[in-house]
Length: 366
Image (spheres, rainbow, N blue to C red):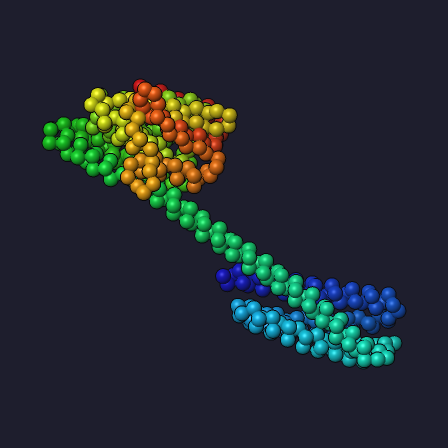
């Protein structure tokens, strides 16, 4: 805050000097215009000097009472404003008649009162401008603080949502690895450990607010599927079809894994014969559309419910997309006929550079 305060203080004194010397120059030109001699500049310089002094006193009172109750601020501000206006008018009268030979005193008391109200008008305008600028700066600072706090909360929310790994997945994976080791299938166990290690490294190293290409996201899905394939074998069949234009589009990292996990949990694992999951992605009218379909029983347990329980992965993904894209995204789930569930995501299309799009591969795993 010290550099900020120092910069604000410098700005105040620069602005204060420019305003008062501008006012003094305007007074000098007005005096010359009504026939005053060139020596009138001395009175104008004295006017500028006392204007700076009296407004600095007003500023000190405003600063000292800024955080006090409103009635105290108004009382203190009004008192110092009236006092400084009276002093300013008196000093102006003395300087004017002492240094200006052609200047004559007013014929009545009303002339002297006019000096007071002239000074009051000038100092009130200065005070109003100072308080207005100070309020504007304070509101801007509070706005920036609120935006910073919102951004931090936004970031924390995304991290919480992204790092919410399903403990059942880790338990089942470790249990499957243990079973492979006990059965003497060490090569498969090593492969599963490697796949789990790669998937966890990718999930923990990537920034939750980072966008990755859909092709990169597909690679993380493949790591996850390698683990699940060991558990389910031929019961799990997957098809992934992504157009090159969609593959180079940017999506939130680890967006698809919860969707695949829910499909396996509610569609594949509940059928003795297993099932098939199809992931299709393409671009459409400036948007990226991703659909995930399974041929499971289409249970209502698949749909996210408030208060936790079933469908946590889908609720997690839906909330992440809402935080990241707001109303620019859509997330729908519906049961298909005669069976199965269809999840559709529609996101704003954020592209890579043209040369990267040309090199982007198309995935079509069967």
